Each structure stands twice: as structure tokens, then as C-alpha cells.
Length: 329
Image (cartoon, rainbow, N blue to C red):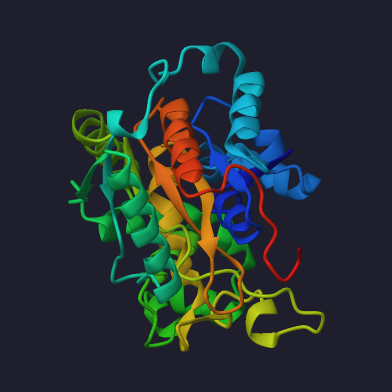
């Protein structure tokens, strides 16, 4: 068992890539500041001054299976966790309403992730769950823009001089390659000029709309957490993957080179709105035999509902506990 922090998928993505379970709790359920910004004194000091990062960042557990993750939420959440919604006794997947969000133009799911989604949906339907295609109640591109604006004040401290100069001159888009799908310049502009007026209100309105929509229609939404499968840990540095500069790092999805920053799209909604979300493995990739996973999220306070669905889905997929990749066993 271990704790992590999640502002851009930093619990859920590595958990899925390593074939374990990672949960980002409902905002306010677990104490987050000291965990999220315990990496250095200066980062912690900055975090206390930059309020958007403080309220967006959340701690959460990672473990070999859902049972251990659930126990950690119970233990660390204390009285707050005690008041969260609970699944019915002897619940099964047929009791749940599940929405499926398969892909998005900002960060299209690769073939391996799409196959994992099909396997998950087939298992849910075979178990009698109500499964429908998601129709987002708010344009996801707009919530993504708001999310990137709130990242700006923190990320702006690490911005190269020319990139900062472009943003100061109102030409932030000039810093980014033409193939980028994400509106990353929103982050640059906020990093230089501050979070735009009205962003907090836009966040609150989107949160209320999404939360009401989920409570009325769905217990859980199933969607990607990352657009591709895990890749091997290389003993020699890979310049494309190891480059930490925002504009230089790339990823390969189905043979296509993509801007790495686009992968923030899938984690963003639960972070912005404070929803509970769980990343979990579904299967091994056909090419390479490494983990492929998804995430499940739900309305505020539905942590144990989300975890119950994930646990039962993993059982239906024959993945009750950590399974090492075939080449490691």
C-alpha cells in the first residue's frame, strides 16, 4: 500500500501502468496538502500561496487490489469517510447504472485501450449492468480549458523565457506545435497573467451540472485514464519520453507521435470537479503483454460505490489481485 497525489492523473496513471489500483478520493475526504506537496519545502511553500493547486490537488491510495484501497480510504478518511454513500449489501453489477465514455478528439483512445474498453463493457453487460454511452452534460473541452487555467500559476514558474515572453505578448499559441490537440496556451496565459476572472465560477457551475447529472442518471462513468498501454521501463534514457520540457515530450499511440501533454485530458474532470476516480487494470496488451487499464468516476461522495463497481468488474475480468505481466512471471 502507498499514498500518492493526483493533480493530473499522478495516482491513476502510474497505478494502471503498473497493474495495480489507484484511487483519487472525493475532494475533502482525505487530507491532501502535506502529501501532495511534501516533495520539497519550496514546493510546499509555493503551494500554500497558489490557491488553485491547493484545492485541486488530492491525496489517494494505491494498492494491489480494490479491497486494500477501500480499507485505506476508510482508515484515512475517518469520520468523513464514514458519512459517504455505501453500496447495498450483497450488491452486484446488475444493480448499477454505468455510462461509457470511449474516446475524445483531444486525446483519442488507442487500439489497446479501445480493446480494453470493449472487454470491460462486455463483462458489465454479461453481468446484467445497465450500460449506456455517455453524453457529457458540459462540453469537456470547456472544462479542460478551465482546468488548464488553474494549473497555470504553478506551472508558470517552470516556463522557459521565450514561452513566457510569448504569453506576455498575448501570443501563447506560438509556443506550441501545430499538431497539439490541447489548448495548452490557456495554461501559459494564466501562468503569466493570472487565472482569468470567471474561471472559478465556471468551475463551480460545471461541477454542479456534472454532479447533478451523475446523481440522476449514473452510478459510475467508465473511460480511459491514458490513451495507450504501458510500455517497457528502459535501462537507457529515451530522449523523447525523458524530456520533461512541456513542449518537447512526446508519446507514441498506435505508431502516431503525439504531444504528451494531451494525456492530461482524461484525468482533468475528476480533479477539477472533485469527483472520486479509480484507475485499474483491465488486461494485458496484445503487443508486449503489459498492463492496459481504464478509470471509473462518479458523483461527489460516491467513493465506495465507484470502488465497489471496480472491484466487481475486476472480478468479472478475472483480475481479483495484482497479476504480473506474463514476461515477468
